Image (cartoon, rainbow, N blue to C red):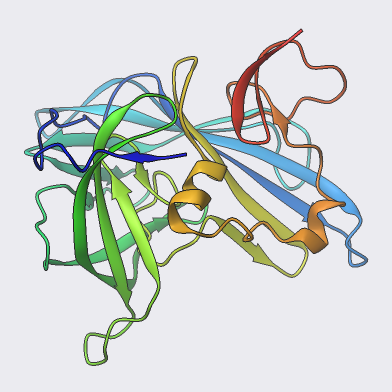
Length: 264
């Protein structure tokens, strides 16, 4: 369970950096046949690793890593762009079009609005229809992993001309949003459509799990979002520390049902 440290003054703990070598956001995309029998699954991650120089400034490289493509089982490792953090703001350099986007802004105060213009679906897509969120709360938080950070809770507003919808999301310093590295303001832990279900598994730092998708659901109050009707078709929720599904007996440090444990 998440523990909100309401007895602490706001920003009592130090700012938690977002851009760090070894940090990864892990996902799985389950693809089904027309009768909803399993077809294949793609386990993929966004990993920060190594430095690069862009316009004379140092950035951290961001890689997309997957265990297959939609066409074949082959390991994928692709440089998607780079991240840079300055003054509590996180910037993303998108390789394909050589553009820079503001990814997260942790300088916001209660009552501020935030417009997003990029998301990861799963590849970075810039200039998307902007999502508008209003900061309703900023509170210190302690995650199950013991990590202390600050949570920015948003109320999602689809159109500035209308009242905010009762749909909430959050950003957490050092972690990201309810969809991990993507700054989506619309509450979304599970993406789904006809023939596929996509899950945010975890945010990790080297071998340490910082937060899991199940913890995110608990924080959002969306514990039923992983559709029960599909649970029998989905592979067992046992993954290694990098978010890859484990088939058969699991040994060592694993993520089972969203929790880190040692399987013997």
